[in-house]
Length: 159
Figure 1 (cartoon, rainbow, N blue to C red):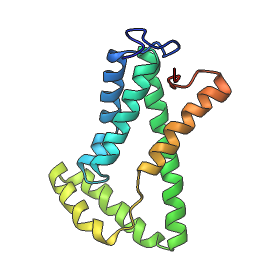
Figure 2 (figure 1 turned 45 degrees about the vertical axis):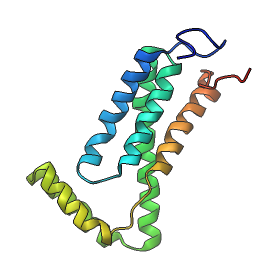
Figure 3 (figure 1 turned 60 degrees about the horizontal axis):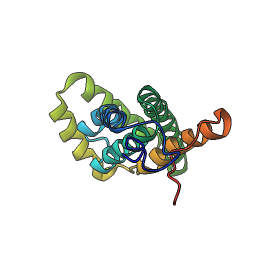
Figure 4 (figure 1 turned 180 degrees about the vertical axis):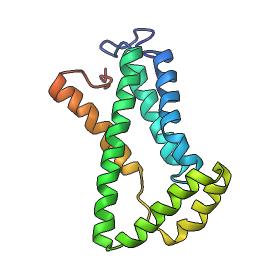
């Protein structure tokens, strides 16, 4: 909002439209996993918050691109963390069985049935708090943009 009305200098070129569309894109990317019980609503809200923040600062198309690429970073970081969690807990066979069940459910059952089975499986699973990969992925990608591509960070100066 500050940049739309030019209240603060150097407050970016984004605006309310970019913020709303980046928020919707963030929701669309992560909601399917939430719908089948794969993560909590807090993770969805965090993803949407990152979209709103980035969209308010960067230009319309640039913000959506950042949300999309940062989400890919999030998925890769989450996969790496999950891989090491599985190795350290020595539960490779259990996790392979869970993966097979989840993929089978996705292919043969409705979203409601898949979500119910995921809820039943949850107590016996070791869950990854996905807020960690979300923060690492988004902030890491913004740092990459700033340090290597010299694109300014969305930080508002204190006056």
